[in-house]
Length: 389
Image 1 (cartoon, rainbow, N blue to C red):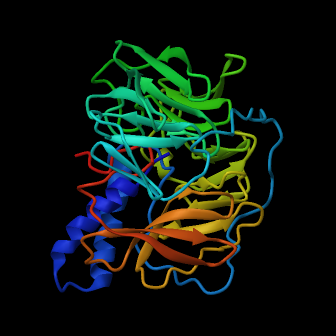
Image 2: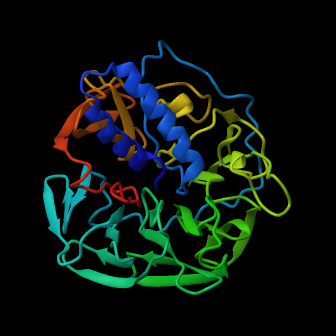
């Protein structure tokens, strides 16, 4: 799942050229650039990044009300066992995927964007080819066509990953691949013709939750259930930024009204608060506008209110962000389990490299796992490339 991680990493590289510039000035410039990109570029908001240090004392309760809604389809869990069911610190460099202490070659395929599933890795190349790597073999599956943003999506603890193919005029073919069975499924939905896409309406798979894929076509956001084959309209007339994340039946979405019956405005992509509920028509509980990245059973979620990274409890909105002393700011990259996650960390605004951290909510701290990575040399398992132009 992806969002603003790529933009912030690129912005951080720009900030490295500021030399002795004051850190707060660099941070302010980064905030401004981040907000501009939110309004100018597509891409889901599942991975976002902090641009300032987290220094919030105590626990904050920032959600409003507690209406969970009721009319939600329960997710169907898909194949939770496999050789790669365990989440570890993971990144890719060229044709190699580094999974914990293990290095997996996918040559001659070069990783442009990738995600982890329980049986391996879904990969998209710069030429829009889709592959599955199980640690021993690499199999070509199909093609992907999103020009930027989320190219491929997966569930935190399941075997399925999904993507969109836009090679046919006026159509978006959404694919789901079950890495446990080797079975691929597809559904064709309406899409604008090439060249007619707005800034936020690129068809894509926004999220995967068990047997449910959340897809965006030219009509809005829909839920495609792989077990029944049924495609339900979740929200009409919204862009690809309406749904922030879906996990264990919970949805994080922007409830801003559309500008008109004909479509949505840029303001409706990020204008108001995020609602977390099981009912897509619910209006509470509400959280500040920004991304949502649920933990595997949706106990916690990452949120970037005011462009700062926070880990909040879904039930009552408490800030439980682990201490990350030694790092000016961090960003959740991937949940390991419902308590732990891997984060990207920058020591300060002038850093030319970043580290990957193991963080624990319960333990309240983060530890460095891999140091000195370069944004120009690696890709992260977020479903989007951090090296796109």
